[in-house]
Length: 357
Image 1 (cartoon, helix red, strand yellow):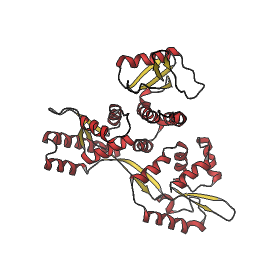
Image 2: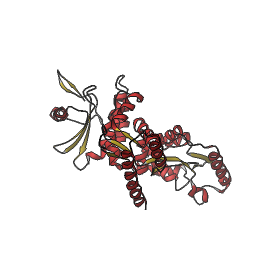
Image 3: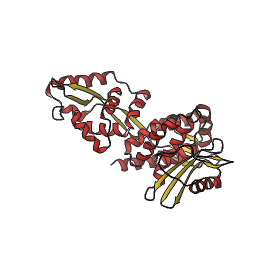
Image 4: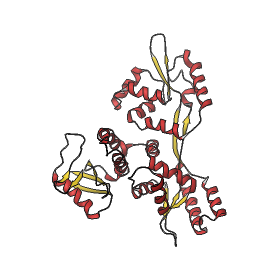
């Protein structure tokens, strides 16, 4: 939605197309945002709906509005809606965002039900969040004002909402925000990092025949997995290639099954009950991402086997102790800031260990 001084609220696109929203409701959304005058999210309950709305700020002036049922928790969608707003603004000049709306809607719909590895995949796929993660991995601690200056210089897109991103990071216990006396702004402390790489499908490799692979393909399968990992080298480019298919709900559901068994088309087609409507497209995505191999017997039956799986999880960043040591030696940060950081890391470490247990 946009605001037009002549006609009032102007609805630019809606999805699904048959949804109905009254002008009165849109005016209430507009008025609530207007009260603060700042970009960011607001939540409203109107009639039988919960509403989550993101205002992109007076410079661009767009409102991205998510209509929810009364039993839906708006907070669960907040981070995803901010990301959708960013994608829309990046593609608004030529109206290319209009074609993206169904896909963006699908992402929003599944967001609250994502498991831990899917959530982390979504985080890493977002370019802005990835930039912040990489910077924090290098420095550990940085002031909010320094990060803002750095992003304005390095981030090529016009729009970003740092406050919303940092709030989401805090909710996920990825960072801590502290105030240090004498510092111009809050200090951002990195306490958890994302670790990811391809891994061999160990459980299947131990006994491929018991997992559904005909005996005649066993030796070839094991050889191809070994040869793949002899040449494999982890990289951000490869991680992004895998994650791009990883976050597709249909692909992910298929991957979950192939982690436990070597499947045929007849087996995989049973996934239709779980929303996998286009198994051929899914298999192509898995094959192109070098996640599966296909073996065909004399009768024409095809067997789909994982050649590589993908591991993604949070880790405690022990390497930051060396980053702190270097900062102390180079006097790039005050001793007070570094001592505060060590205390926060110590608490985060024991908290992380207890949760892992």
